[in-house]
Image (cartoon, rainbow, N blue to C red):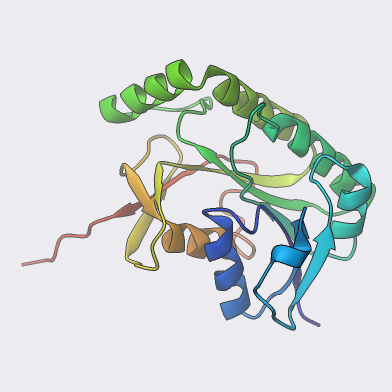
Length: 214
């Protein structure tokens, strides 16, 4: 039986690459879309669910029967990250689904952080420039910690929309680099479906340049 993954934000900057990577690795997908008629990727392993992430009825169509939920929900005004996560948590718990993987920015603070100078400066810039968004994302993290789900909150730096791949690193205390390839991010997100290393944790993930050994 094929593993089914519920994807939220599958048409976004990160979500498009996630969908492609999930298909490459043989998963069946359910995508929550507000306008499925405009979605042009036709694939027998994709099931489209019409609805909004803030609608409990849409989540009740999306989540039951899936093995995990991955969200790459993008920014909006007003921010809806905490509201969306609240509904996702409630629906997953109602249907007995445990694994939830979601992305956020490097500005989110987590106990045990030891951010480098550039990461602290980037975090301060984001908090000053987008206070409502960062505050809502911080509330999202709090909701996850209060839940009983097997969640992973993936903190990322600047996202580069590219099919280029290379080495990436994950770190629980500091962001390894200032950028991440959307393809590297997708590979990491999919890897977390089978890897429990970061369950109930919030790793930073970034693409890094590996020096050749002499």
